[in-house]
Length: 198
Ligand code: PNS
Image (cartoon, rainbow, N blue to C red; front, side, top):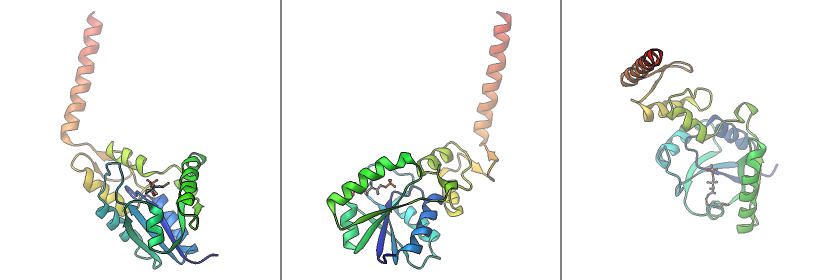
């Protein structure tokens, strides 16, 4: 296996178990794996770059050949600046392929010496994405098993006091929300009564 520095670039907003799975797999193949967080993303992120850096560092303390960094601008320029020979990207399903192929070919056009290597995360994470994790968490749903515990804790901190997770299945809805729920069900009852009368 070719030894050298590989770069695993992404947004990691937030890091998921799928990302971590890929980092672990990549760390076994490459001499050094640099997980690189894009700083100048157009998207408005849920977590700041500093928070993502902190989470990823906490998640990879036991992986001696993994380093976490951030980059701005063109990824291939950053990759060259750290002497990376390879770009690592994860592919979960066929739906990822088109975008990844386009990106890999564009990166090859920009820097022909850099190869892109695709790896598959464990199939149990094949449906996990940062976007869906954010969506589920923001709506008060459980994300246990989808993200590492460190990330679950950070999501909890970020989204409180709106919602409090206790375990994978129970969710404590804040008092205000309960009152609203009651109001809604009372409203439904009086609507039913009104309909009956009519
Ligand atoms: O996790 P993501 O959001 O799918 O990662 C996308 C990322 C950060 C790898 C990609 O957008 C990127 O490399 N951006 C840096 C700018 C760049 O080099 N663009 C040309 C890539 S074709």
